[in-house]
Length: 136
Image (cartoon, rainbow, N blue to C red):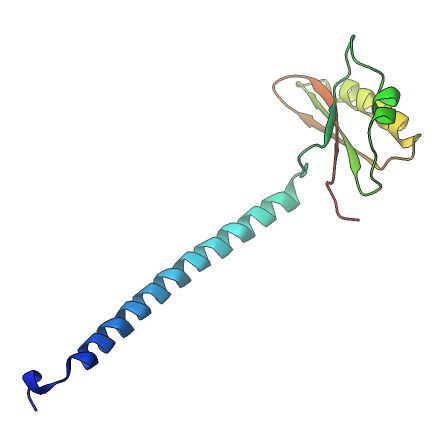
């Protein structure tokens, strides 16, 4: 039997099988890259503090309400956590810690789950983020 005698459907089926094989290999390669990137993100999030997007954000200031009145105006879900985040320049860790603890203690007095994050940065800042940071 020569190539002229071979039915056309067999050649088409062989081409389709080859195409399916190549598409499958390409998809598996992308999945492996995606899994590796996901594992890297998870390991990085375990190393550092993860702060979920805020449902409410508080920044103390001269024209700002007190943390107590701000918390009273929020709808507090028991699954939410108030993260008090303080950043400080070099040498300002103790001052940042005391300011953050002052805010945190007022929130704890209201029965809200609080965590405090203090870290060195280029500038000093203090704020509180109400969010679903950790599953409960």
